[in-house]
Length: 335
Length: 294
Image 1: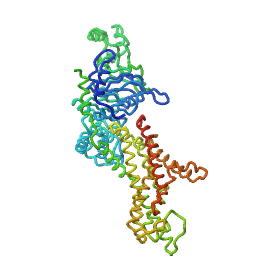
Image 2 (image 1 turned 60 degrees about the vertical axis):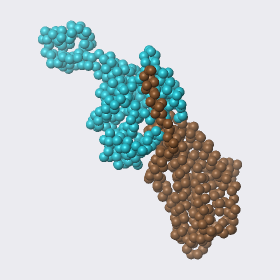
Image 3 (image 1 turned 135 degrees about the vertical axis):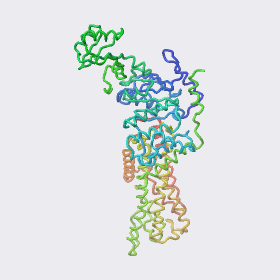
Image 4 (image 1 turned 30 degrees about the vertical axis):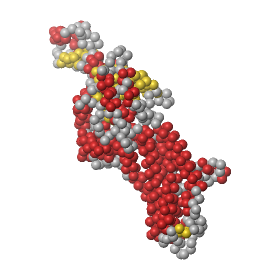
């Protein structure tokens, strides 16, 4: 599975360079077409995935636990052979071109895995030695730089089994950053980190993205995706539900007009009279679908009717609202 | 012209042509990692202790001047007259079980242990290359076979020199050879014993590719080792015996004949090569196609 000729591979992208709707995908870093994985025993883990990750994006890969995210990532990394369909990473087919593609890819898959009896530094030296294209002369310097980047310099001599989960996570990230990468695949990178650690990782992801690295970030945390990602794909039960820029997706789900008032019954009546749909009163909050006309008129009507208004605002739809709208179910339901 | 080519071009270019000696970086690291494990050192420590115990036992038993009985491992009765024979005795005593068990532990854990710890997926995305990783693992297990055998031999030589006189020795055929030549024979025997373990090593490596549990792979390999040893003792199965990897193990004693009797020695080495080829190929076929889900 290792030897592949480079001349043949360069045409890999053009074969998949057009989507079905004809749009060019030339700058896509990951392209899958009908990617499917059925495990022995018949369980369909990933079902006909058409995924396109644009170059330079921070791509959020979102879905509940068990929705097929990790299986997809493993197929992209050449660890699992797809049952059918194709996956191209950096323009070359996987898993056939793994040896050529993977040196340009840093990955954190399903949490870090370390040799407990080796120090943090020796763990990184080993992973770097596993890459035949990594220059042994710069190995020590690159390991030192990677440790520094994730803030583990002080603990680099400790045995990895003594690391906390957060430190292990950082060391896993350091392994992904041993060389300049064109694609970073980070599967749940903030797992086990404290809030400060999470912020640091998010800052790191943004910094890497600014340097031009495409980041493929899987998570089951909606706000995490919302904070750092430019694009997002949503999976549930092995199927891709939607993908696109984060802003577009959130805009797809409409916001709600929320009125905070000590007179909720009156407010609800007025809003209905004004022709607003789906009016819901909940304590001192009355919400409704925002109308197409000027909201100032609605507010004026409330005040004219003697409703005391404390707050009047349109709450923007969150990604979670979008997700619920797309799947028709709560987010924490495992597929 | 299209951005597609711009994106894919650098990959093709930088392509990552494996350097000369491209597998050695991982091999060095694998050796370092294996021999720094507490478990490996413990196994070698046990192996080093066996000849010392045998030497002390023989010394105590023969302290009253009697030459000991005819029982026990090969060469044991000659130890008192020449400490060098402790090397042969120790190898004969450890080859049926201690040595192959140690090899089974290291070989069984080679791939399955990495899979169980999850480190296998990171080695593969590094990318180590599946064939390269498997070759590295087998080469490391081979080095361990040699190291384990040499530990037994050197420990036996040291214990033998301390507890018993050294000097010229008598071969099985009754001829006299010098102590120097005896040492050369001892080294040859150690090499043959190390080579005798290559079949178990390949078997262990194959078992190791079948599971994600290092413990399960070790237990299976050692279990197979015991089963084969038992089968080799059942006379009714004599038709099967020439194909059991342990059948010709003790033929290394033939190196102590004058002239050397090569018949069983070649059969042993051929059988080990056959096991290495069959189970090495099976391990390769399995490992290069398996889904890495751990």
